[in-house]
Length: 260
Ligand code: MG
Ligand code: MG
Image (cartoon, rainbow, N blue to C red; front, side):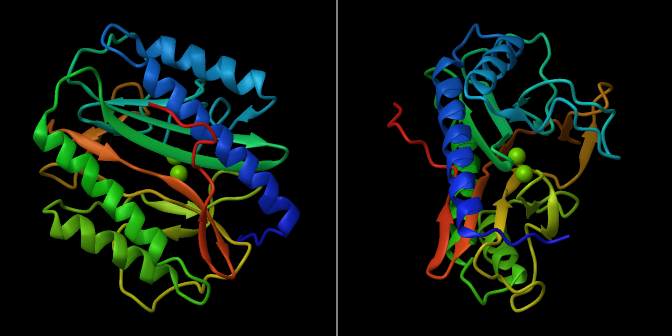
């Protein structure tokens, strides 16, 4: 089902998106060397509850996972890229951490993910990979005009990722979002322009380019959730929830407060 939201619902999505962004930035600033992934999950829970929001993850039990997820945030370290189940792991300087968070606030969901380097190290290949996913996300957002098609977004994202030298996995990509976290249409991270569903004002999409340095193949952890690169290489993921408006795309998951 594809939902088209009215202006009041988009306003609520804006609030949900800002909350997700603020929580992610707060968690980023607290994710230093020595932080345990279970601490990050605990902090995420506290912030979601304090805001009166509902986690989209705790009870999430799709066919591809060993559900329910049971945690409040996805934490992926280095080779873990999607659906990272928080576990007893202490972050080290130079780790590449991906945080992915979705909440429901006043009946509307928002979904965003960030990747960053923990501590003071500057591993250049990892930073280049993170930057490529952010550039691909921006290209996808720029292509998300009313009247454009899903394939235009996919093509824009895939072109940036491919030109940066990364293989593109087509199993998991972006998605519609609204009263629930995952809806149609699917938004692959590569595709042909001019194909697929036509974008219209009130459609909300979560765009989420992600890459692995040298492979497109995933393997699943024994935990039944965490997806890692098959080669053990590092990975990166960037995601925003956007609303299609009559003028173009509005990014809903930008922080309200400036963060360092
Ligand atoms: Mg997400
Ligand atoms: Mg998503």
